[in-house]
Length: 130
Image 1 (cartoon, rainbow, N blue to C red):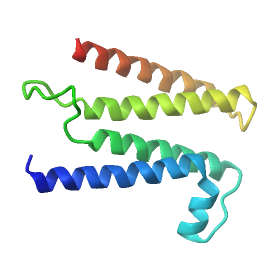
Image 2: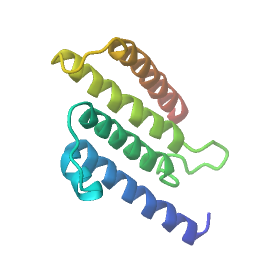
Image 3: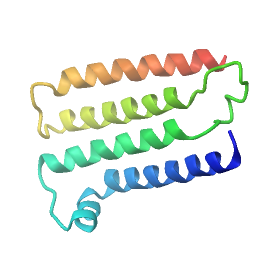
Image 4: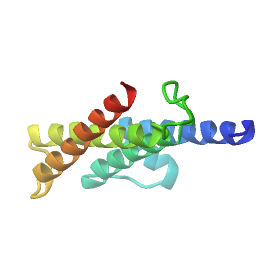
């Protein structure tokens, strides 16, 4: 990868991660500044989930993580991006369910599905590192 492409990927990844973190921490403020609209109710939860996805996208697009320097192996970034998303969404949904916030029919199946994916990605990342 040439230096221009590397810098472009790093710059875009940083922007997406900062945007995602902002959506996770202050979704109302972010949406107000972006769209000049209020976000309430389920929109807050969806905004935070979008934040998780943007952070995971940034992680997934980060070029050459320190432990995947060997060109004979596929990059770890996509695995870490998916691990990041599934881990964050699992924690968030468990928190929502534990506090009885907006618990719908698909909340706990979503927890199980994303939790299973997160564990499988943890196993895959660990297996590739050993």
